[in-house]
Image 1: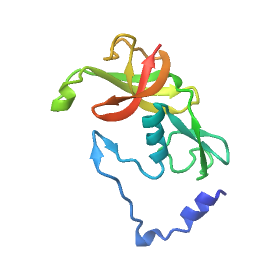
Image 2: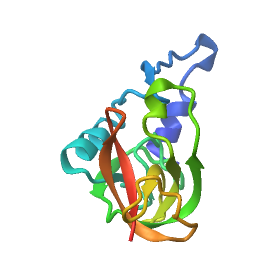
Image 3: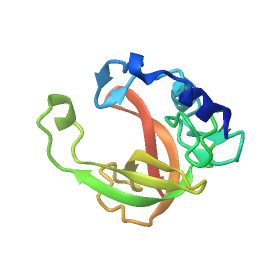
Image 4: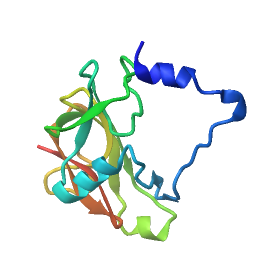
Length: 158
């Protein structure tokens, strides 16, 4: 049994456990202690970093608190190749929000990185920032770009 599971089993849940979430902006939560490294590297290097479990070596997204495979809680940050393929995609054609009206149409979706980690990202194709022409299975590279004032992942189809 991992150390993390043992610690969670020792918590007296009858007394309650305080949980907090930062203020929300565009559906994103401010960086937590677990994700601060991810967001700072995305901003400074325009590159996606993943967490690698120190117990079993499973790669996973930054927001995971425990390993999805062995429940370990110790991780090492690894730079992703950024390469992957589109798993699912949707193009947003209409917006009620004044800021979003300035950027429609745009495409969002889930990209499966070559490290077998899914990531939610904006999707663009060569010469078309709307990403309308992107198709499931298209290959590309995930980096980062400012979108509505926030540095967010951006998947560029090859």
